[in-house]
Length: 181
Image 1 (spheres, rainbow, N blue to C red):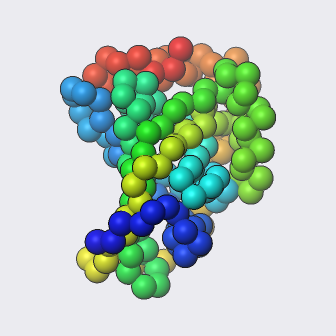
Image 2 (image 1 turned 180 degrees about the vertical axis):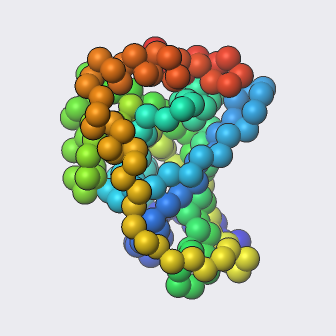
């Protein structure tokens, strides 16, 4: 394993080439959560120690609840194609919900995103540790394309329906921690 001072150009290029990444969070008590993320244009490196991703509606809100609890977050990128490599970004995240007045302005961070209507928040991460490791056991897999199911789901909902969904499914974590208001 190698620890880097920041996200240098080589690491930035590696991160940009990955079609999916994993998000890990945990509250002080309760379950640890790991979520796969993807979709072209939904992850950005803002500067050498800051990244962000669009967080779309889902059946749970563990990441949001955990970040509200303590802010701890780890992002992991694995090479499923090409030379083996794993990059981990450790940091402190903050949630910018769709209801935040600055949310719309911050969407400009994601000029390559195909659609942002179904997004429920932006996760903004201040990175304090960057490392990479071999990834020799990560399998080789071929990328066929992004799934559009989540985007199509969001397109069928207006803002009121999305707000009702957040209230029903995303107001607290599986451990009862507050997530989205």
